[in-house]
Amino acid sequence: GATIILVYTLLGGFWAVSVTDTLQGIMMAISAIILPFVAIMHVGFNNIISNLSIQSLFLSPAGFGGIISFGFIIGTMGIGIGYPGQPHVVNRFLAIKPGQSIKDGKIIAIVWALIIYPGMILLGWAGRLLVDIPKNEQILIEMSNQLLPPVIAGIILASVLSAIMSTADSQLLVAASSISHDLKGKSDEFSLKDTRIIVAVICVLAVAMAIFVDKTIYSRVLFAFSAMGSAFGPLLIGRLNGNVDSKYAMIAMLVGFFGTLIFYYSDLKPEGNPFERILPFVTSCLIVYTGMKKG
Image (cartoon, rainbow, N blue to C red; front, side, top):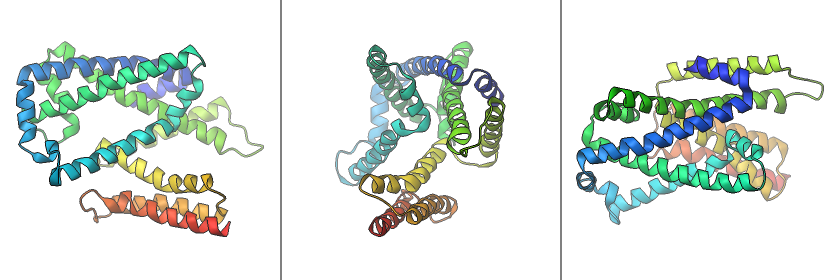
């Protein structure tokens, strides 16, 4: 899989990544319609709701369960707010043609989201009744194997790979662009060959991390958001409100990133993991605030 992503990214660049992302997005939308529908028909919607109501954490409108649900919603919204600012998403905004293409893009994005997210939520609810597996991230694959014919199950599996590939190829391209353009000196020039080498090296590092770092995809995503948010978020807020001394800016970025990294690998992880997701950010904010006073 990694080899396929690497090959078409190296050969086709941004155009190939954009075309494959479109096809992969269509496959994901089709899967988000078919599999939840089949799962609901198999177990019944009333049974799904009854199973959820057993645990007040999921459906209680008030009380302890309601408070935790509210916190979960706020945290999830935080991920959604950060999504449009990711470099590989910003590239799509920059590449879109003005005028009608932007209007069409708005409609396509909203419709796609309305298909994917409710479909995956319903699938997760149904999965609580249908399958019992230790790794929740495999629930889609397991349910497709149980409920669908082999050919259609293979298509569903391809949609899962599509979701992975559509993110991986974009990240590879953005990372290579950052190194070859943003970090070059005034007299340095990166050739197409150099850029392709950078893409290959990043791909190898990503594969090694996926193999040897025993974490779920969701936990890695949360770590990435926490680390980047703690490193750059406070500095961005400070720059929008004034100047920040360069030394304090650098210290704030280092403290935010490495603070998140330390707590991520430490054993100090209470419920919600506030040390990893809050403490480095707050500390970085205080450093930036001090730097604004000095600047």
